[in-house]
Image (cartoon, rainbow over all chains, first blue to last red; front, side, top):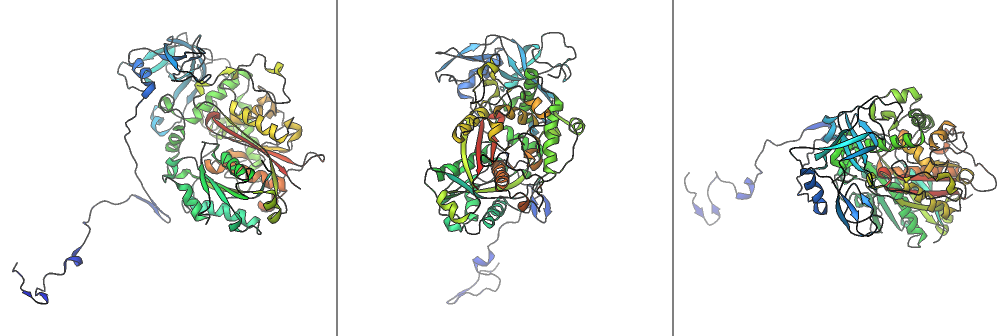
Length: 187
Length: 423
């Protein structure tokens, strides 16, 4: 391109426009997934990875990876928790870690045929609240190897652990510890 | 504390999805409805407001409360957001009561909303389940219907409650809603219909569970002086109670029943309480509200109850928490017909959450609006002249009274407020 000649009034060229007339966002192939134009409904994506610290609960999850079920006991009033907590809800004092038995009983249960999106593909699955002898509170877990028709309050159950830990509370799950038979009552 | 009156209320018709209106427009519509009902009330007489919505995940707009508030033209006056899961609306109502009772405001508006249609139902269930302990509960299979189902199973085990009794609650509430034009669902059901609908989490079927909704509701509360000026037919708030319990159901203690005034400790000698069969927060909220209102026996001293029936099982559990029957007798109570429209104490004459819908932040305020219209004798006026669900005062010796009950995640936050006709 020939160099434009400069006069007192400015550059003489017809080919070049002033710089500000050329400003332009680059075009992209990004756009929206549109479901409707009346009203306008678009797909809006949202995703995030957290650095989630288990903080004071960490020993519970590490324990699961070692085949141990850890609960809490209040240092002052000796209330015993199947789901650990750093401070006692009864008296507010600090708790210490205790080891829970690996056998318990079904305190309550359900079979989920639907669920949150994250668990939908796992349906149907069973949830249980587990009670342990001598422990004051319960533990929420899953039970396998038993159906809605066979689950019952009071059933003897046993903890099992994943071999490859996920470091979440599903590293422990329960299985029946007595012969499974159809339930007679509603619960 | 000085007396507080409810002088107006408004709601939008709750829908599965309302994509044509943002939450601000829905709140504005409910607010305008309430303002039209008290024409003498000017916007500049409102000293401030409280706003409620449950989930930032559903809204995907932080500080949505101020956006609703600036839409109503209530800036730069005081406002705050109140949040407590399913009880968000009930807590909002009580926060407005506090603002007026304390003397901070003469007139306070309480409004709430939820827009739950912006994600699919199963994602919505995930958002709701994030209101459970995310270390210990959510990852196991976070699903609120599953949590309530386990409470229902234990109630069935402890007390012999049947799945048919649960279904009766759904049948009753849906029947009442046939005469409520505001209700999201109008269904004439049988017990068989409820039991034969898809199982969600045993023993709860699709028709035992409320749906997600888009909607808004608004209540306007005022001091006696301000109420007298603008409203010929106000309703007095005579009792306020709030209770709490542990987030994790697994942590609920197995101790002694908190007794109401008309109850005898010998009734519950062998009952371990609350366990997972009862809502201790519901009982505490009830006890405080009854004490405040001077209610000695709810069956005699109340004319109706609007309670949080997100699940049929939780309505049965709540009959007991509110002392409408003894602990353990909730199943028999629905069977007796006592909570029906023509029964001893109508429960959810509006149709409750199961039929009206549950846009969380609006729900507790919706209950207040329905109770307000009942106590004004104005149901037909707001319901296309259909007064079928309008209740009459039970007694001439006292003003007509109703209780509203708002409840969050497996009974973590519960509010009970008692309203009384002032005429």
